[in-house]
Image 1: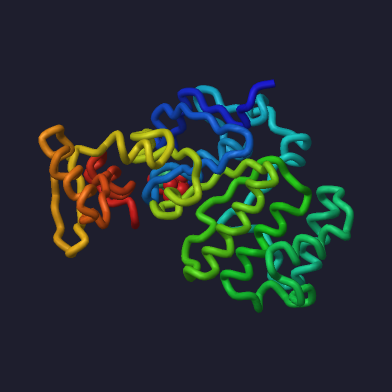
Image 2: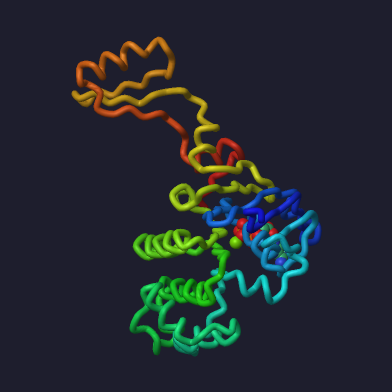
Length: 283
Ligand SMILES: Nc1ncnc2c1ncn2[C@@H]1O[C@H](COP(=O)(O)OP(=O)(O)O)[C@@H](O)[C@H]1O
Ligand SMILES: [Mg+2]
């Protein structure tokens, strides 16, 4: 069987006069964290809505090899979603919310305690959702998404607006899920998050894909200066072009024990995005 959990082929979508997706082709492999990266309004949530059967599209969109137009119970059983408006009932307690979803998914009720523990919400069983902080709500949303052990999880900007400590707890949970073989489809406008968390990413700008692949490889591809940043043992900084002319200088520093650090100068994802689109990514 092939390894692709998600396949988009020339996917288009318009809302009225506005062409929001202009031909997106990408795939997501089993077991990877895939990042869809782009500024607000780029079309990220629209893609999730297409992939979860909530919106129709032009071209072809498939999930587990099944056309997204034909999504039914079987696909919902195999997927989990962490969306911005995560569909939790404010007046119900954490445990009651999860019990409700356990019943919908026909999942045994002992999973409720397990997932609350997994997301670090032990002791919050009886707390009403409306009393939770944003970070706790986000963790409860994640607990809801993993309750039925889905193979594929959609996470739409899961750390947006969270403090760095809570964001890194969410990241740790994502890594835990990935180690268990779960595939994660993440959207974000945070380039550091995408660089650190994702095996592969697609950079989206105004409905078009402007880069696709491993984050580090994308940065290397768009490296215009073949420069090396060197710091010597005396703290002197040198910027040398990466050419044979400088081989002797570098070898000399190495031989004399004077080379403290040497780095190539790839741009970060934000800089790549800026050079491809003329726009800032982090907004
Ligand atoms: N239901 C809708 N009706 C009309 N326009 C929409 C609708 N959903 C999204 N859009 C428009 O599509 C564009 C992309 O939106 P969205 O996919 O939510 O972007 P992102 O998630 O990347 O911020 C935006 O210009 C948005 O206003
Ligand atoms: Mg969105």
